[in-house]
Image (cartoon, rainbow, N blue to C red; front, top):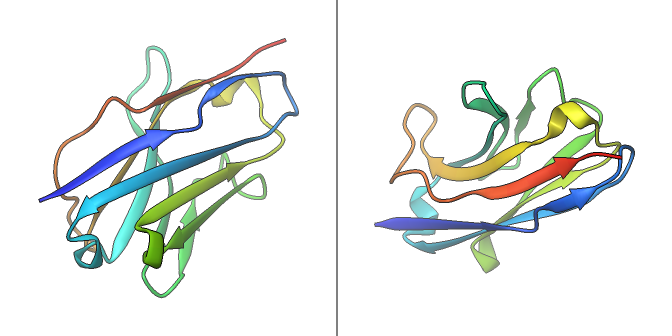
Length: 117
């Protein structure tokens, strides 16, 4: 079993930055891919970024050039650095791990990110 706990969200002004953290417990080595998702009000859950054990990354078009995903296997932690935040980035952010084709476990409570002036 692998559990994921998100933290680091908050209220920021447009153009600001936040760094989200995702702490994993259990068999972290089995999560060859880690992914950040978000769900905005009235919207479906959206894949934001992913990273493999080897460090390969992918980003949604809406966040390319602004967000950076990273992974520290020694600390069982994944991060999402969010810069140049926009109001449309407002959402609950979730992390989850798995393989290239399957995520493990279930969705947690996520962490709220609110971008507003």
